[in-house]
Length: 254
Image (tube, rainbow, N blue to C red):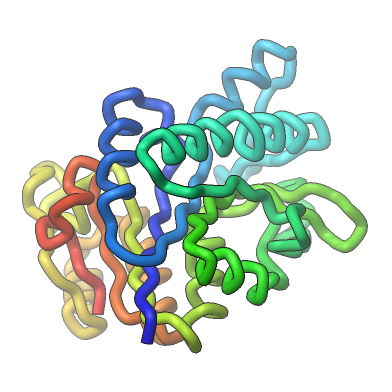
């Protein structure tokens, strides 16, 4: 079976010149078919404030994506960030194409709930299109923007895009997902950035979570990783951009 690596990175990594340089260098060095999914950082909020748009937060702490904010997110993530990544990858010899969900109906979204405005979830993937691109040795770079059947834009979680895309491609590809975060991996001690847990299976994870060792924000990503394993993904890694070239220094989920 052919191998595919799906790299999912946060916007914070992309917005820092040093970490962006490492990301491009080490992603380009990954052998075989690959796909990059990127999220958003502070850039969209900065642009929104310059335009007089104030980001709003719901009572549960989630961001409310208003009509004005979804336009900014589409411009920044679907345009500026996405095309910057593609240009940098082209410069190092990677034949990349930047896509939102709207392009050739790659991702169809639906509204997650009314509370968070135009925050969406993936409902459908154009799997044949992704297969065609990957078989043609093209590297898709996916922005976290998709549209519903009424042509309304939605903002998506990059982690969800990576998980759903991996699921639909797992029948024909042997898939590894790499999640890049601000930490070197899942930590045994939150105050010690080097206390990385090298590997986690379900039983060990359950024990550590019960002991209060796994923080809530880390738990969500680990559980997403286990969901991907259940859906046919071979391996999931959680690491930082400076350790992308040495995955054995991060956390492997199995």
